[in-house]
Structures are given as C-alpha cells and as structure tokens.
Length: 130
Image (cartoon, rainbow, N blue to C red; front, top):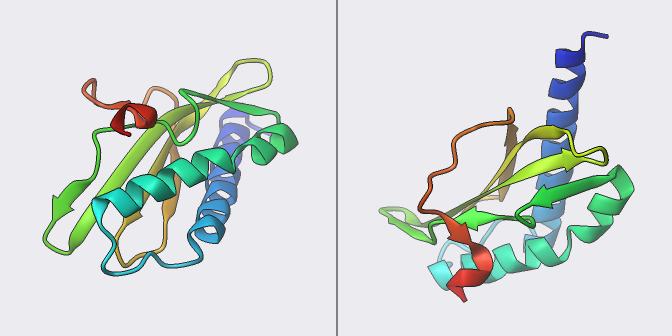
C-alpha cells in the first residue's frame, strides 16, 4: 500500500475514534444554550477520557489531548471552542494535527489534518484557561 494512503487511513480512523469518544462524553448533541464555560468543561472531560484510546492504539498527543485553544469564541449562533494537538504514533512519527470543535447545539466534531497543519501561536493549553 502507498505509505501516504496508509497515513490518510490512520488519520481518518483516528478522527472517527475521537469523534465517537467526544459524542459519548458529551451525551450526544451539545445543549443549544451551552455557555463557553460549558464547552471548556466538556473539553476537559475529553482529555480525561483519552488515556484508554491512547493505550489501545499506541498514540500520544502533544500537548495532551484535546490540546491548545484560544478559548470559547462568541458566534451569532452561540459559543464555539476549537482545540488542537499533534498526534504521534508509538515511534514518535507524526500522524497529524487533531482539531476538536465544540459548538453549542451541535454534535462534537474531530478531524485530523496532515502533520504540520497551522495552529495559531496565540493558542494556549486548555489548563491555562481554568
């Protein structure tokens, strides 16, 4: 198999696994009236639940999942929180950059972009926002 296709398949698989975990952790769709603080609390819960997935699939995240953020953004439809971290395999090879998006009233979404995807410099660790 073409190595680039194998890497794309790994990113798609990781995206699906993390999305499933996020939806389960959130209990489905986020409440439409969720505040920015609610999204931050959910993001912290996502990080607490990632250790099993990391062990099972021999992964690590830098910084720890769900990663860096600028904080909750106010949008006309409600708050949105976007987080990012790098996913690495057990040998330390880059798989990609994991972007987790939490939007009031929607299901959580996780996508894995190719390694080196841009994360703004002003984003800070989730722990710094508490």
